[in-house]
Image (cartoon, rainbow, N blue to C red):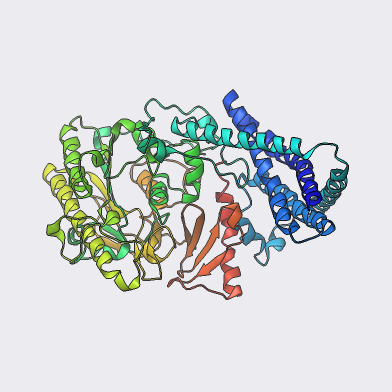
Length: 608
């Protein structure tokens, strides 16, 4: 038994050296993006830790089987596992080199779609090179097996080296965590260089336990980015800023599409009769960060991770700032998490007010937003246009005052350990009470604007960041599926000079930015900064995309949802659901829907 494990340890050491050689391709291709000495040390540290992590895969797998097998079969297994690992690294780097992202579900969906090799010809030189490299890997792994027996290096010394690598791993993870707290972009933007790498973040711990100020966006300057965004020149019109309309965006957390009705949202519903109402509108995500990101950037939620790592603000804010807009950002919850202070509102930290939780309970925060907006508007008297974002949270928390308990439920009380279909009614009723409460507060804002005369020159959007499900399609809450109830939201678009109209073609959150740009006369090639379209013009699109932490769903005109992961470890989890969120097993339909990937893959590497 001891002899088998000595073999495994020595073979793992040699395999680590070989894997380190392969990982050096990632390292050298990314060193140009390491702009400081600390960034270079971090990149080298994460290079060593990633190489070590991958070398542990055949080590751990073989160690388990070695308990039951003889030494000869143990050698064979180590060889097989190691060959699979190094082949994966090679294939992943080829994808990373071409597209800028790692092996994921989108790649698997594309290459398993019938017709892929008809439309994508790799050519004889590529295939010959690929086969040659695989043969070389076989030879190297055989040599590792053979040489490990003759390696004149004690197992204790090797284990000491492994201990050093564990210390390096812990050190580089801690380096990232501290850099993330202090917005050190030279470090954070390098977190996606290596496959399967998981950076460490401690923002919540630092804020709650260490009382660390995680809001460090003042005087923040972008020096260098791994992103090329935008890719086009944004040309603003030469207009007197006093003629520009104000813009007010009201987002209600978890506000799903079927809540826009006379019973649940009577005031917003009445206001919608003077607005454009998009009846078939989808959020860019099934959770807050991805929904709001898609709304303000005009991009797929997939890009959230890279834009956060690069601390990249949206062209919407920078362009409006250039045009002379004043800003007021109001949120009932902290914009530290999700990290909107480090993304969406990075350029305007002085305009953010999101500390209501320190002074008010969940219910009081909602009305405090209204009062703060009024104060902002009262002090805004320099004739410049303003942009304001108001983010209500009551439906998410299912919190409301007693006088709004029209659906008979208790405010904010949900026992998540016992929640199920049988006892979901009261929980949904609490949610509807909260919607009803926020609806009344929105009316207060609209009445105030009407009294100030602002409705004549203010563009207003009322929408949700995502929806909320109560087991209608088998799920509860949000961020766990892409059902209609989790991703379809109201979109009331009030444009003073346009009459009411119900619009039924498919629109999405990432259509908002290009629409605003067109309304303001801003000239730019849309393909250089957004994946959206002007939603005021009929859009004949085949699909929209909605994403979350690691999944994206292609939602097409027929209501089908093709789910794929952009995380490497979930690459083979590809599934298709119909509008009712029942899984579709028909391979013919699945393969037909996977063809959307061919167009999508170019947009997944566009800004690298």
